[in-house]
Image (cartoon, rainbow, N blue to C red; front, side, top):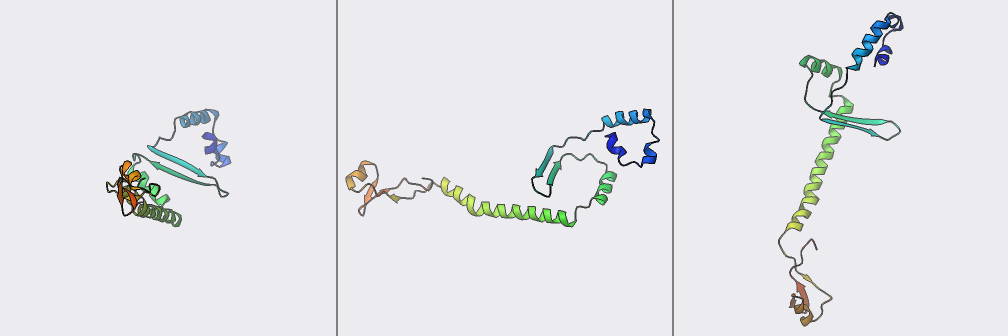
Length: 150
């Protein structure tokens, strides 16, 4: 970590550090670690432009002054962020509509207690039909226990 720090210090200043000061900095930086977050998702998307996505969430521990400074330094409402937020809302809305329109009716139909009688074409005589517990009507064998999930 000290080496990364020295990359940003002008050379004329960096040469003034004594070995004792460098060792003290090195030991102090050893204890500087990032806190863990309750949610820590880091996703690299393989593409030619080397895109990545990070989602962190957890208990807020920064001071109000630090939050204000960071808010000024990294504003939320900039074009790229607005595009990502808009896309996420659109995907969520379309997913909700899709679930309501296609998935929920299918689940409801499968759980329905209604029977949907259907003709059984391979049972062609009244005797065959009645021997299997079905109903013979209008020259067709009907199964009243058939349901939509069959």
